[in-house]
Image (cartoon, rainbow, N blue to C red; front, side, top):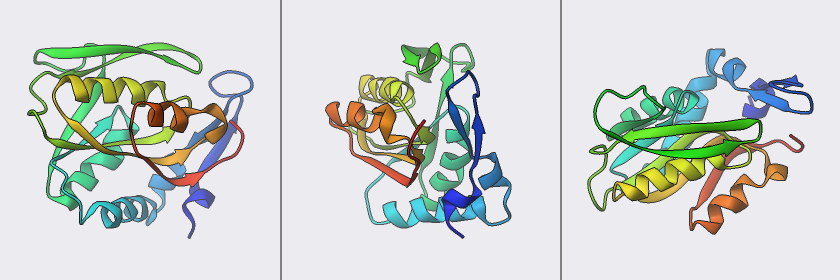
Amino acid sequence: MPIKKLIRTIPDYPKPGIMFRDITTLIKDRNGLKLIVNEFRDRYAGLKIDKVAGIESRGFIIGSPLAYELGVGFIPIRKKGKLPAKTIGCDYELEYGTDRIEIHEDAISAGERILLVDDLIATGGTAEAAITLIKKCGGNIVECSFVVELPELGGKKRLEKMGASIFSLTVFDGH
């Protein structure tokens, strides 16, 4: 079954004019989570990847089993105040507000090759902040992977301007 058919669209959430692409319907499907993890695993199995970094919270759902499948470690990138050890952080803007993400300052060793994973790329603000944190820790981004891309919001172009390679399993027109 195509991934796109398993993703629910919720109009006007979290504010009017936003078409929220909800992957909970994809991951609750008996084969949905397996399908997306396997698609990513097959793409990255032959590449040298040291760790998978997932952005809170849906990036954890995808990134953890993907790291397991690839035989590498997993790095959580969390919202402010959620990590217990010393962190570095980065503020960013969303299409509907602002926020901050953090990473443990010892999460990445210099030169490690990191695969960044999240559920969706819209404006690219969250992923841009995550890339900034990974680079501050000395990591190199192998690629940024998303289940869903919303191309009209420009996130892919924004990340490509940073030198990042972007891969998405499916694309939705509109926002």
